[in-house]
View (cartoon, rainbow, N blue to C red):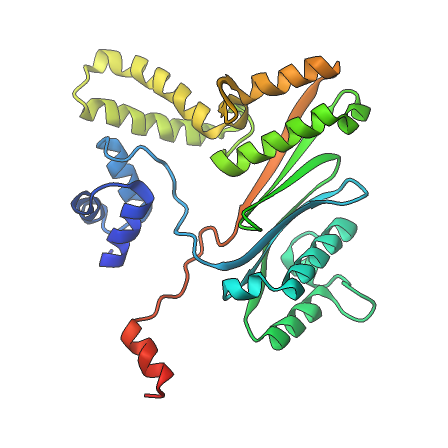
Length: 304
């Protein structure tokens, strides 16, 4: 598989490795981006396991908990940031979230068939917005949680977080101490981007794959094979701290984990609190923005 200079640049942005190291990694892996990341990690050059592409698409993420307790996070993309800041666009996104809360659609295509008002489906309204605003728009994805939820929006809709909790005494969800804790947890998710709630949720194949990378990493460091397994055990614990929400250091107090923080609040409230699940949607995550050659762009502007 061939690769381009743009691929080298993208790999560098994803791993913070040197340009020549990225070029070598892509050469060794025939241009496969995921394998190139693994190659760099095995060589000890890249520590991050991020595979998401560069974030480039515009639009916004809405995260909201409605009066019936249903929480919704939805991403709607547009072509420009200018449109995303338009009040009409923002109102449309919120109305779509309301439809999701009320009708519980199975997926985006099902959502588009649901009524958003007396005369239009969501799909009809989307088509009308595209015609009115003059830009292509797309409802990309959504999450919907029932129960006790907390929503958080970061940077005006760049990141939306929804967290679902379970309390032994549900009435304690109205307590200010719980609300503060719930918002703190949502902000943690926005800032640190965990992939799972707790260790037991990490798929076995993901753990084994990570262990193989850590083993290759240790061997490439010249460590004796006799102690490599012990090193892997220690390093896999760090992996869990990186990807599991409850094991992460709490951003407001690095001396405690998120689990310890939540347990402390639960003890003060006199009820068990469990983080059940979460959704973190980042605007344009994994989508590439169309790039145009500057000379071609100028030529288009002058009609050549």
